[in-house]
Amino acid sequence: MKKQAKAVILLSGGMDSCVTLALAHQNEHKLYALHLNYGQLTEKRELKSFKEICKHYNIPSSQRLIIDVSHFKQIGSNALTDKSIPLNKSGKIDTKVPTSYVPFRNAHILSIAVSWAEVIKASKIYIGAVQEDSSGYPDCTAYFLRLFQRAANAGTKPETKLTIAAPLLHLSKTEIVQEGIKLKAPLHLTYSCYESNEVPCQKCDSCVLRAKGFKNAKVKDPILSN
Amino acid sequence: MKKQAKAVILLSGGMDSCVTLALAHQNEHKLYALHLNYGQLTEKRELKSFKEICKHYNIPSSQRLIIDVSHFKQIGSNALTDKSIPLNKSGKIDTKVPTSYVPFRNAHILSIAVSWAEVIKASKIYIGAVQEDSSGYPDCTAYFLRLFQRAANAGTKPETKLTIAAPLLHLSKTEIVQEGIKLKAPLHLTYSCYESNEVPCQKCDSCVLRAKGFKNAKVKDPILSN
Image 1 (tube, rainbow over the protein chains, first blue to last red):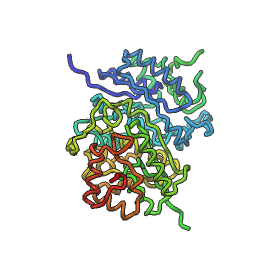
Image 2 (cartoon, chains in turn brown, blue):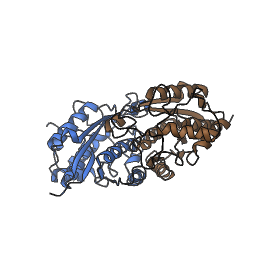
Image 3 (cartoon, chains in turn brown, yellow):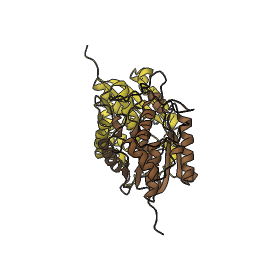
Image 4 (cartoon, chains in turn orange, purple):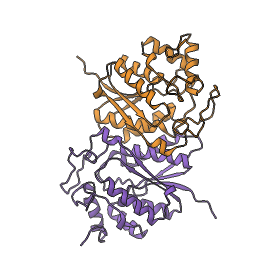
C-alpha cells in the first residue's frame, strides 16, 4: 500500500474549511485537522462543527489539534472578538477592509500549522481562504499566501518542504457550494455565522455570503430550517 | 516637538533583546515592549527581566504587552518546553539544528508583533535575532526575516507599512556585549539561561554563548557572582 502523504487542514468548522477538507480527503492525504479557538463570538459553535466534521471523516483524536489562542483578544481591534466594535450587519458586503478583520490572523493560524506540520512531517497545509467574492481580508490573497509559503520554507529545518494549498482561493461561494455537494462534503455539519451561537443571524457578512452561494447554486442550505 | 515613530520591540529579557531595545531607544522611537510566555522552562525568570528592563527605560504599562502562548507546548518537539527532550549541555555549541529549536518560533512571535504593530500604528518591529555565532536556528536568518517582512506587508491593511529590524543579526556575542556597554543597556537585569530559574546553569547553549561574549569582550558578566 502506498504511504499516504500527511496534510494539515485548517478546519474552522465553516463551509469553506469543510469543502477544503473534502478536497484533501479526495487527494488521499492522511488528514491532520487543526482548529483554533481565539475568543471569537461563536467559538463554541465552531468547535462543535469541527468535531462533527472530524468524526464524519474518521479523523482520530491523535490527528486532531485544538489550540487556544488568547492573544487576538488581547491585541484587540476587531469585531469578531471585541463586542464593543460593531460587525457589519447591513446585509451588504463592504468593499473596504471590514471590522471583522482580525489583524494578520492568517499568519498566526498558518504559523501554528507550519509548526505542527514540521513536527509530524507533513508536506502540505490546506487553508480554506477565499479571495474572490469574499470579505476583502488582506491575508486571504494568493500574493500573501505565496510569500508566507516562502517564509515558511526559509524559517524551518532544511529537510522541511511545505506547500500551502488554498484550493478555494479563486472560487465564488456558489462554486464552493457546488464543489461541496460534488464531493459529498457534510455541509449540514458546518457553521458560518460570526454573530450567534444558536442559529445563523443571516445578517453578518459570513451569513450573507453563504446565503448568496446557496441561492445561486439553487440548493437549499441544510443548516437552515424551513 | 517631533512626533516619535512607534516601534514594537520583542523583549524576552535576554541580553540580545535588551541590547536591541537599547538601540531602538537610541533611535528615539516610542517604545512598545512585547513579551511572550510560551511554557519555556525559565518563563518566570524571563518575565522578571522583562519587567525590570521596561522599568529601566520608563516604558509604561500601556506600552507593554505580555502574551501567553500555550501552543508551543501542545505542538511539542522541543527541549525548551518539553522536559523529556534533553537540552545540549555539553558546553559546546552544536552545528546542527539543536533540540532547543522551537519549530518556526519566530514566525509566531513576529505574527503577534505585526498584529500589535498594525493596531497601534507602529512602523517598525525590532527583533534581537542573531544569525552569526548563534545556535543555528533556521528562523534566525536574514533570508527568513526578509521574506517574513514581505509577507507581513502583503497580509496587512494597505496603509500598514512595516519594517522588521534585526540590528544584531550579524554581530558576534562579543560585539553584542560591547554594543550593550556602549549604549548603557542594563545588562545586569537580563537573563539568558534556558534551564534554570534560579542561577544561570552555565552549561546550556545560551549560557555558553553569553559567557564567550563576555570573556572575549574582557568584561565581567554582571549577573554572575564572583
